[in-house]
Every structure is written in structure tokens, then in C-alpha cells.
Length: 167
Image (cartoon, rainbow, N blue to C red; front, side):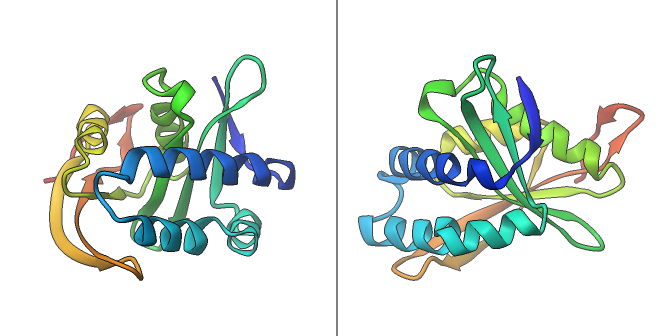
């Protein structure tokens, strides 16, 4: 698995993976209108170009060079906000999402990382736990067409090559 910064050539594949994966992962947690708004707000060509220019998108490629997944993050002075980690359905449970999070952590080793997961997204919660994230605050988030309840998960900075947990 190769993880690298996204390039302009990746944008179409990122949008396709996001569309397929988001619909599959969230159709039981959110209504169609909310998913459409979410995809438009996060993965329209203009939004992706802005995120790409800020250096906030990492991609994971499989051994054949196909896009296995991507992560979109924003670095703030006191933490890294992992906006999303998306894996192509055909590449799930093969380590690409974990590789993306680890690459992000190693790029910003002195900062804790947070990731918001919609309550009820059991796969997302198990993923966070498997990487040493711990559950944090719960809040409502307006997705435009729907209000959802989200839990923020936190992971402490990478220290001495290991990830420890923040309580």
C-alpha cells in the first residue's frame, strides 16, 4: 500500500470513490437528501481542488496503482481534524484506511487527531477503536438536509513510534 499526497490527477477518482463509498456506508444512517448535500459540500470539483491546494488530501494506492482510499485532514495549531477517511468498497478491511491515518499521524506527530463518526456507524466506531482513538464529546451536526448526532473520537500524538490514547 502506497500513501502519498493527492495530485490533480487523483481528483476524479477521489470523487468516484467518495460517491460509491458514502452511499454504501451511510444509506442506513441518513436520508438520500442529506447524503446528496454532504457529497456536494465535501466532494464537488471546486471543494476538492481547494482541499488539494491546501495539501489536506492523502491517497492510498493498491499494488496496481488503483486508488484504494483517501483521507482529508485539516491541521490546526492544537490538533488535526480528520474530516474523512474513505475506502473504496472493494478495498475495505485491507489496511488502506489505517495506513492513511498512520501516514497523517506521522506527518503531524506532535498533534492529537480527531475524527467525527455518526452515532450508529458501527464500522466507523470499530475502526477508531482499532487505531487507539477514544470516544469524546457527542454533538449534533447539521448536514444541510438533516441533523445527525456525531461522536468525536480522539487519538493522542504519535510518541516514540507508538500511538497512545488521550482520555
